[in-house]
Amino acid sequence: MAQPTKSAGNTPRRRRRGFVAASSLLADRVQKAAEGRGFAVTRLLTHWPEIAGPQLAAVTRPVKVSHSRGAFGATLTLLTTGPVAPMVEMQLPQLRERVNACYGYNAIQKITLTQTAASGFAEGQAQFLHAPAQPVPPDPQATAEAREVANQFTDPTLAEAMARLALNVKTRTNRKNRKDNPC
Image (tube, rainbow, N blue to C red; front, top):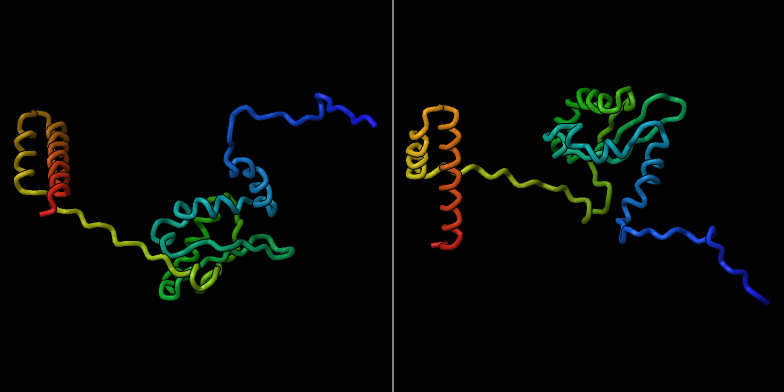
């Protein structure tokens, strides 16, 4: 028995651009699934530091958005640690306004806080950020050299910019020399 031959119309088209990231192949499907309830939950998850602000984003994380039957608006559940939960709770009305301003309408009706990890004990441990590095004051000799460079210019704006540039160059070379010679 003869097998039917493949016609040119039934074969899938080959992509000629090489490898494609899996995330780009699934982006449309994920977006449609996330927007199934009327607004994009993905925007809330991906832009959380911009929406909540850097201080709240450091101690909170959006876990889920749940919708109640028949009611307009959803409930946003945030994950936080126990010691900061009272401080976060005081800021919930302002946070709700920021989230709703992101969507342009009253998408989130209520925000609830969860003080436990969303995953297991080992995986869900709180992440603590390192304290920001304190800037090291510049060397007095480097500052004097930067002032000498700045005194060569009559324009005060240009002189200030050149002083900062000279100071940055001098401190950078000092840092490189320090790394090479740890003594």
